[in-house]
Length: 464
Image (cartoon, rainbow, N blue to C red; front, side, top):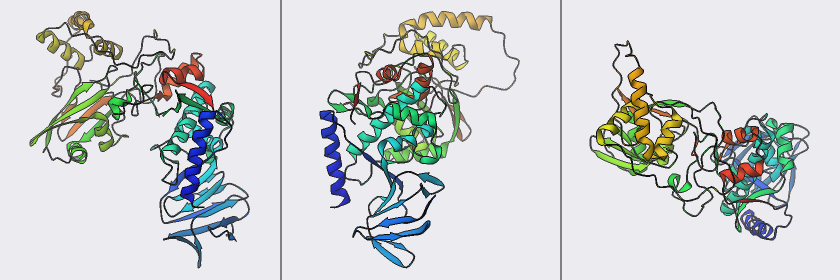
């Protein structure tokens, strides 16, 4: 039986087990490398390899393996793919140790095949702090388990379920396991998140910057109402609560060409042209010497580098957020976008409040409140006038950089051949916010409540 056919059988068995709520053992197939050659080893005893003909070979405690078409070569010997490699101890590859077995296939390369729960042992301490609150770890375990299983259903024809990087979720094998994170996995064994009769898609990210994002705004998906933007309900500060990034104009131009296929020339201005109810940029407009382009902010971030531009929750000058702790996570957060009331400022007042924003007159909480409730802008305008009238002129002869504001109060600075972005949080913003979950756990919320807040309308079920 081919590996592909086995994967299809597992795929349908998983659907049956989910719908019938039955026990179903499950291995996960993790892609570690697509290279054509690699060195693998074992911590105890020798490596044992079984090829597709059923022949078993002893490879000593390490082996250099090369993939050549439908075969692998070990020294002067050749073996037909796929091959399965096991050992008495943990397997070794690329400086890491692994439970389970290695599988080498022509299509996918080197895979780590192991029990789903043991896979999660190597995910939790890689994704969140190993010493985090237990309820935050349990939350992550349920979300990560659901994510892996959902991906396996989507990738039945690829020969693997997930990759080991943040393209899916970070997995670093057995070497990083801790007793506490393993306990979080064991205490939630088999628990997944469901929406109606379907397994939920449980995207997660590090820090929302104050408000999570609607999946329709980030990736255009409209069939997942539980992936809607919700506010953070507990104050917290993470290592990426505020950040700034300097990006060369040339890199931005290359990113725009990559996304649109067009060359708009040297970019002179970047505008945030649409935002969501939490203040996160949805669309951005780039003005160049040969034209302009408006694209989705999430596309721009990925095209530049998501580790440089950490999120699309841009701010005039960075700064951590501070939320009013009045919202209760109940699982009943609306999935409809709130349309804000119209601003009650005239043109001159709008220009003044934009300048106040650029000058840092308002706190980040006030900026979020202003954005979500334009009818309050008149009140904030008066507050800002009071604050600026009491301020003393700065004794600084250095001119401030030129900033062009738009109706949302954002400014992206142009300095020479660079643009400077300011922002909050890290990640795409969809689904579970890991730092927000940690803050909720420390305030006494249980994993079930945390998941209900970030994925409203879902419920927890057990599949094994």
